Amino acid sequence: SMLAQLCDAAVKVAAVMTMPITLALLAVSGNGGLDQYQTLEAQAARLQITDRPVELAASFATLTAGSVRDVVTFDFGWRHRTGLHSEAKPDDRPPINTDPGVHPDEAQPKYDDSEWKPVQLPHDALIEFGPSKVACPTGCSGKSYIPRHVLWYRKRFSLPAGWAGSAIWLDFEGSFRKTTVWVNGLPVTSHDCGYTPFRVQLDNISS
Image 1 (cartoon, one colour):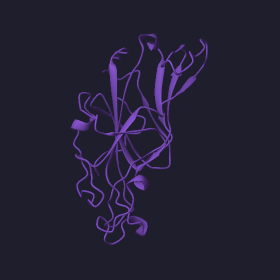
Image 2 (cartoon, rainbow, N blue to C red):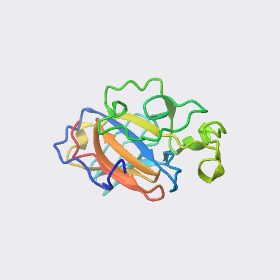
Image 3 (tube, rainbow, N blue to C red):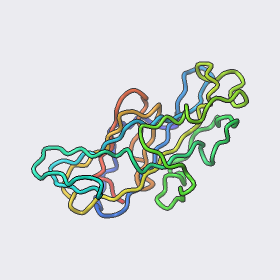
Image 4 (spheres, rainbow, N blue to C red):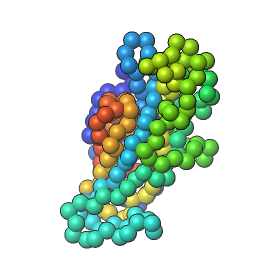
């Protein structure tokens, strides 16, 4: 197994609230047997802020003070690439070894993702990539002829200083199937189920 189950875990270090944050996700999946192909279907994401008024961007209304919990959409501003360490072509077979390493380049804040495709969540990269009898000569999973590549998603954002002291959670409604999350290049959590939500706590992760 590439990753251990670390649901709802986070690195416990001091928060630097005003620094830019780089979020990266990668997942692997398989349906047993010899079919160990990979995919990531990123579903809707939400940023939850507790006990602080917030202004996320000009497009969002300022949230009212005194709220027990405020929820802000986090579905926009993502970048996506199909392929473990380079862009996969339509007829490429997924790699057998899907381990990107503990600190892959794609998870680092200074990584250049300008060539990655801008997407918003929810996003189904499997269907978008399409079937290939060259990549899946035996049909692949479910005889769909759709290769299950490793998929990356990245997002850059900042937490304003006014959020200091708040409990800040990033909630994902689903990500198929075995997902790993890095924040500023550090692996902070993994989730081994494509049908259940998971979350990452941001207020205790340093930049």
